[in-house]
Each structure stands twice: as C-alpha cells, then as structure tokens.
Image (cartoon, rainbow, N blue to C red; front, side, top):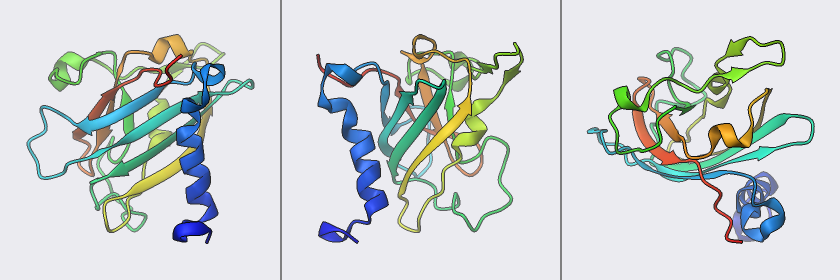
Length: 174
C-alpha cells in the first residue's frame, strides 16, 4: 500500500488514465468518458473513463475505471452471456442512438487480412461495490487511431446488454 491506502497497481492505473492530460505530446491517445446509456432502462448507473494507447509495436493498451457496474461481472462468475461484461466499439457515433442504429462492432483486421472481434479481450471484472479498474494490452491488431475516433464505445452488463456508452475522443487540450 502507498499513500492514502492505494496499492501501487491502483496508482499506476490512475497515472495511466491521467497521462492524457500531460500535454500535446500524447494528445493522440483517445479516451472515452463513459455515462449511462440513454436507452438503458435498468437499475445500473455505470460511469467511468476508458483510454486507448497505441504503442510503437502495433499493440494497443486499453485501460478503464468504472463505477456502478454489474456486480455479476466478477471473477467468481464463469458462465456469462455472449458479449457480457465487456467494452464494444460500434460503427455508430452517438450514444443517444438505439443499439440497432449504432451498427455492427468495429472488427479489427489482422495483418493477414482476416477480421476478428478484439473486444472479447476487454472483459472486465467488478468488485462487490461495482468498481472495475484495469489495464490490459490488447491483441496486436492493424487498427488505427483514426478508425476508432468518434465511434461509440459501449459497456455491457452480465446479460450482454449495453448499460453505458461514450464516444471516443482525444481528451487532451492542446
């Protein structure tokens, strides 16, 4: 534990998420402010932030901090619905649109030309108080920053239904 009772991994995650505000040198790293999805009518009120960092080796680091998330999305749950407890980047751009209008998931292209769903690697785990704070390196994909800017990033619950959303932007002020 470090100051204020935060572990070093929690402090590293906070530093990673806050890094975008350091200046224009890293303004290219997209971030997302996550709010409850307008068309969601359940009891969850998911809020948070997510961030993409594009590395020189073509890998993409993805980090997030959520509150109010579905506690069924815990390490203890092994059987979940398809698309449950994860982030999904859609073709649509406005979180005010119904899911049908947000369109398909943006699939990543491997250098071989094949498409795949990279968002299965973004499954999140929630603590008993509805918090999720994680950072992961995603697969090495041929997905550019321009391909994700402006699109809607959805957060799904344990049933695979969208509960929160945000548009991918560059949060840095230059």
